[in-house]
Every structure is written in C-alpha cells, then in structure tokens.
Image (tube, rainbow, N blue to C red; front, side, top):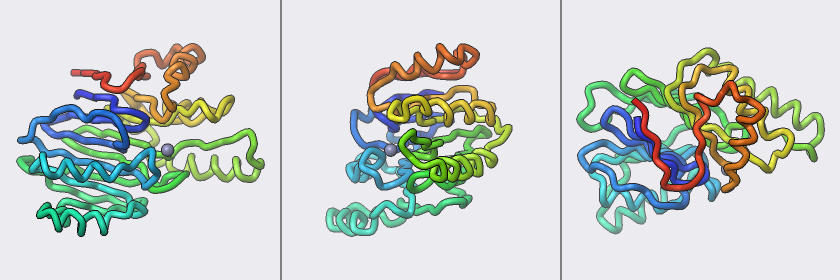
Length: 243
Ligand SMILES: [Zn+2]
C-alpha cells in the first residue's frame, strides 16, 4: 500500500494494482501507471473537497471511474466533456448516503465494494472493500463540536457522529483518512479519539488540518499510545509506503 498526501483532505492511495484518489482540490497529482484502474472519489461539493479539474484526468487515464456524492453538480460537466469528445457518462457513479455499490474495475477479478456513510456536514464518507482489505475516507464526517454552538447543537452532533461510527465498530481497516481540525480548538481531538477507539485501523492519516500539521504532534503528545497508528502527515507530495 502506497499513500501520497496531496493536500488538505486529498490523498492518493495505491493498493492491489489500483489507484484511489480522494477529495482532490489542489496540489500535484503524481504520475500513475495508465494500465491500472483509477477511481476518483468526491465526498461532497465544498470547494475544499471538490475541484472539477479532476475530470481532466479522463483524458489521460483510460481506466478511470468517478464516484461522486449526489450533492456534487456533475451533469453539466458530463455535457461539457461530451462536447470535447470525452465520454464521461459511463464513468461517473453518483452515490447517496447509506448505500452499498459494487464497481467492476478494469482487469480485476473481483469488484470494488463502495459503502457510503452519512456525513455530519455534507455528502458522504467512503468505506471501501478491495483486494480483501478495507479503506476509509471520512470526507467531512467528523464530530463537529464548537465552543460557540448551543448545547443542543453539539449534543445533536454527537448523536449523528456516533450513529455513523457504530457502523464501523470493531472493523479492521487498513488505512483511514480522518479529520483533525485545529479550528475546533479544545474540541479538535474528540472525533479522532473516538474513531481510534471504535475501529482497529492500522494506519490513520489525519487530514483537514488547514496546513497546521502541528496538531498531529499535539495529538500524539496527549496520546503516545497511538504513535504506531497515526501517520505524521506534514506537507503535500509526501509519500508513505507499507507492506
Ligand atoms: Zn471540508
């Protein structure tokens, strides 16, 4: 398994002869093997998770698929590319929350299973099953507790967050991409802490930290027990490889 940090919540994961690109919005996408399938995921339409430039990749990679949350406006993009003789229609899969879909990737014997969770912000989180392993990208599914919000808002947020986490309980996950957002100040760790308690994830990549990777060091100072699991993501272009 190879993971490249692209920026913010954007990561490229390479596993079992396939590529999975998550929530790209800025930064450099590494060169990939064009013989392998590439699946581009969009968790929701917010500008820090979705950049329509992803569709340009269809011109370069023949075995590409796009999996996008229903809130992302893709119809007009499909039309636009049709005018350029790039047929996206059969390459775009639109998903809703709480669904399970199987996608047959080029040259693969078994399908990629795509399970969606309901985000506590907008759109979905993705749980993938591929090559006998599980991978998770949270999108903006996080415990968005804010000091300035009402108790009712924050309580409701907790209910919604733990309802989704329950679905991952005890699950063995190979790699997970989970928000760790310094804007939440004293409440920034709670979502990540619960995720680590609920799941058995081998490698957790913190994301959505707005360039402030010091929050990862702060998290590990409080939780040295997660030193092996938490990946110290620092700058875009960084690559991580695991057996
Ligand atoms: Zn976001």
